[in-house]
Length: 214
Ligand code: ATP
Image (cartoon, rainbow, N blue to C red; front, top):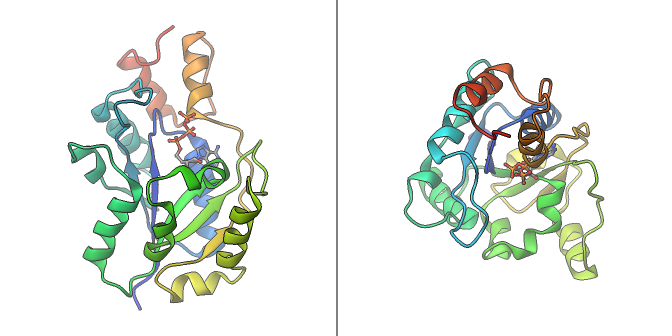
């Protein structure tokens, strides 16, 4: 059986330690050897990222240059249309075959609003979900139906994630990292320091390109 392949989608405007440290902890917890970062397009009706797609990719590359756990897949940015996770996963499933264990990593905030994602119920046919804790978001789903759905899929057996191709949810015991891209952009706009919130190579890039300026 091929080893579990994990994907981590995000806007990464910019990538920060809330992404990197939680996923590194998750990788140890469930035994991930490789995590593919998937920077996404933002649909035109939603607030656009401040950094361009090319800048977001450049920052991701700088952040992962000395972190061999991670690699990068820019397929969602190369599409004309906004990217739906379910469609990207269908594509990856077609490429990898029905038996390959695939997992999609999200933070707890994303789990709580997963039912608003395009064709969300089909996600479980395509992948496992690995959910990292996030400060300020509790573990109770917003409705009893969603709570039942979570219970149906939840596993406490990490080895099952490596044996089954899809369909399980792992609520990870990752450390709480109180960092968000919104807060980093706000701090930059206010001229505040962001040291310790993201890798210094990414801070240098932000300074050099005048991103998130006051
Ligand atoms: P923004 O503040 O702009 O919404 P963000 O910091 O939430 O950005 P995204 O790129 O939108 O970052 O997030 C990608 C994924 O990473 C999401 O699934 C999100 O839940 C998760 N994530 C982001 N920050 C953290 C964090 N500090 N701890 C755990 N998960 C996180």
